[in-house]
Image 1 (tube, helix red, strand yellow):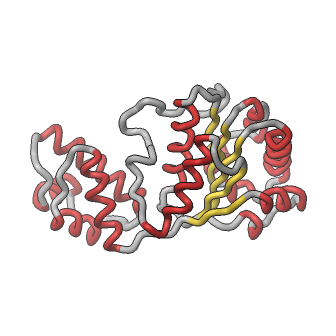
Image 2: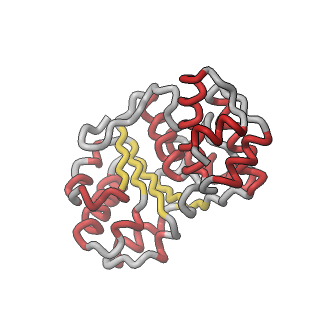
Amino acid sequence: MVTQQLPLPIGDSGAPSFENYYLAAANRESVAAVERCGQGKGDRFLCLRGPSGVGKTHLLLAACQIAAQKGERVAYVPLKRAVIMAPEILGGLEVAAFVAIDDIDHIAGYRHWEESLLHLYNLLQEGRGRLLLASTDKPSTLHWLLPDLRSRLGWGLGYQLQPLDDHQKHAALQFQAAKRGLELPDEVAGFLLRHSERDMHSLSSILAQLERASMAAQRRLTVPFVRQVLDI
């Protein structure tokens, strides 16, 4: 693993994986492409895009898990936190077999960051490394200062994650609960969708909170218990 980057929760049973990602039919092709990239079987340069809360970070970390489990050196860089990092953090990553860079839209318009990303892209292209990027919008539509970077990012294949509808969010909550060993009745899932933030990131965080509370109190998940825990 590349030491300059954030430690990955490799081997953690709660870590993001393809097994605990709720797969909607509309996202099947995109998720399969990301998984192949992590395995080293697909395209070497991919960009995953979609609105906040659709699971881009989950899938990037899942791909890192697969590459690391093969014994490869991996790096994950969350550029949403670029404000507390320096562009030099991308230096040296060309030695990794698999690099995942999240939220690249956060550095569009910042020349030093763009130069570092372009340099890394070129080095990985010259070598055998794989690069998986994530952004909210299509990379070619972002306001890059460097035409060469815009051009390079347009070369790789792009895949879009579609947000879940309410029925799918309901199913996703129950799917994630089952992965945690919890039973989430229909009425509780519906209650969460009516009284919580509706993006899957927020719903997943609430589910983790309920799991801890359920274990501590040795209580099943019921609407009254959920009301008490969440103070709704």
